Length: 337
Image (tube, rainbow, N blue to C red; front, side):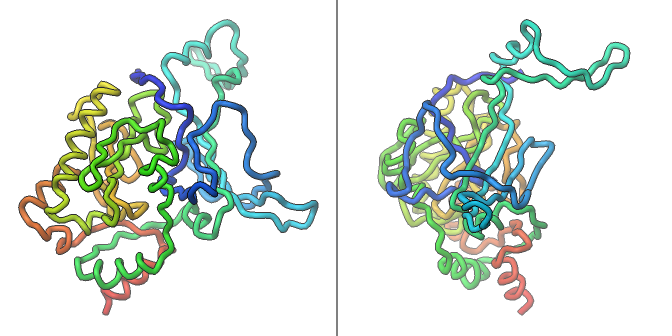
C-alpha cells in the first residue's frame, strides 16, 4: 500500500521529462505563475490530432501532436503537443471507488474471478494533462519515439565536440531562473539554502503529484549559475555538492518522513537542461533516467572529486542518444576519425 504525503501545493508542475523536465517558460511575458484552483481553459482553441508521437500502455501515457487555432477548413493552425497521463491511485480515495453502487460493465467472469470496467466519479477520474504550446519542431522530435544508441564520450570528445555543439544551441533555461528568482513556483519550494555560491532550492519534480511517496521525486537546483553539468565539476564545487546531499536529505526527512537510506540521489549525464541540478527519488521508484547509462550517484561524485580533482574532465562517460540527435552523428564522426 502506498504511503501518503500531505499535499504541498496548489497545483502540480507538469511536464516530462522524460523529460518534460526541460519545459522552458519564457519569463514574465510568457505568463509565469504558481497555478490556481479555479477552472481554466486550454491556451488554444480546437485540437486536431496529427500524430501519436509516443505511447506506453505500461505507464498509461500518450504524447499527441495536434494542430490548434485552425481557421475553418484552411488547416493553417499552430502546432501543440499534449501529453495525457493517468494519475496514480491515492490510498485515501481508493475506497470511494467501491462504495455504494459503482458504475460497472462486466468484461469477464470465470469461477471466483471477474473483471469489470469501473467508471469513477468526476472527482476521481482526473487525467494529468501537459501542454506544450506553441510547439516547435524540436519539441515534436523530442517527444517522438526514437531508437537509442550508446556512446562513450572521452574528455577530449567533450571539449572538442559536445561542448561546441551545446554552445551552438539556443537552449533556454529561463524557467530555471524564474524558480531561483521566485518569479514562479515560490510557494512550492520545500527547502532553500540561499547562499549564492553553495546554496540551492529543493522543489518537487514535474513527474510527481505529491499525493503518495512511492514515486517521490524532487529536484535540487543550485543557485550558482554557469555550472552546466557533471563535466564542469571540480573540488571547488564540493561544498555545494555536500550541502545538496546533506541538507536535501534532511529536508525530505522533515517534510516527508523518508530517510536518507530510502532515497536515490543522483545527477544525469547528459542532463536534460544545462544548469546543475540533482535528483532525489524514492529508492523503489523506477524513475526515468535512473539507469546505469545516465545516473551518477551524488555521494560517488563527491568521492571521485575528493580523490581526483580532474576526474570529470578526464573520465570517459557513457550515455544514450536518440537516433535523430545531431550530437550522435558528430561524436560518431569524431571517433571514426
